[in-house]
Length: 182
Image (cartoon, rainbow, N blue to C red; front, side):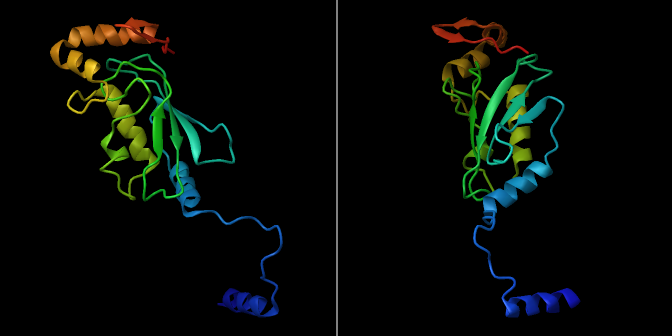
């Protein structure tokens, strides 16, 4: 109670008036992303990088799957958190060119929680686990890379060979993939 009264008195005195050059207030998106980052529980196969430590709205997620088709690979995703976060999902792009049914050759990611199923209660942690799951269980039913999805549905062995070949660096059809093994 004492603090309340002393703050009230400060306001009357004008000693609580904003000073010139004082710090800018954090936006709702900045406050929420700070909370999300602080509560982030990354699996051992994931890591984050913040190119600018003062900018939590732009960062990278590195996923290095330890099982499944993509075991041994290193995949980098860029996150851009907009001013309407958490009411709108962050923009997520895969910077590593990957042969995957749910990631196209431009790096767009097909993950339902990044689109129509996004809800403000979801966090960066939800997206991390969603992305990791895409590497464990690629979904040919909802593809961005239709050719990879078709191969996965019709010939799992050829799909696995294509994934390994692309991760080692090489051509799949007429598309060249850079090496992405760790």
